[in-house]
Length: 151
Image (cartoon, rainbow, N blue to C red; front, side, top):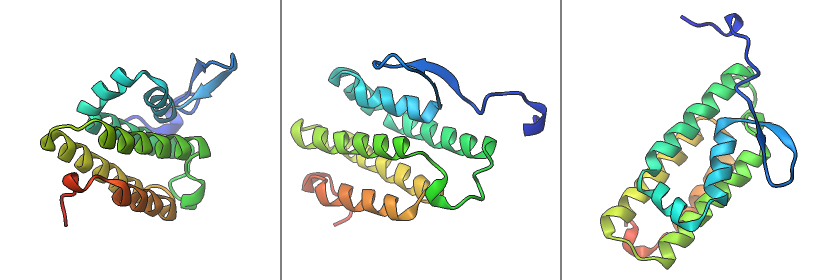
């Protein structure tokens, strides 16, 4: 079994260069959300077809980052960065706007809502619950009535 003390890594980071020209270490979950938020509309719509995969990858990356940085026992408010929280909020807002503007089949919309619900449930175990509950409230208030599963 691979143990943390046996590995020499740079906290799961790699170098990434963004529009501002700065090269900063980026974590997988932050980089994935960055690209989901800043990619073209068609790319994001394709990602929505398998959004459960991206959400699962984000959650696993957050957990691994917490493990390597010994943040699993830290207070929930300090486990993830503000950038991650903002990127997550922005992406969920985009999902809501996309669901309102472009009608999809009921099956696709329902799958999307279920994937978001599982993602938010996973976040409840990891990060500040007040922030997650505000995301849940925002999402449930704005979700189209025809996609609401539980009425």
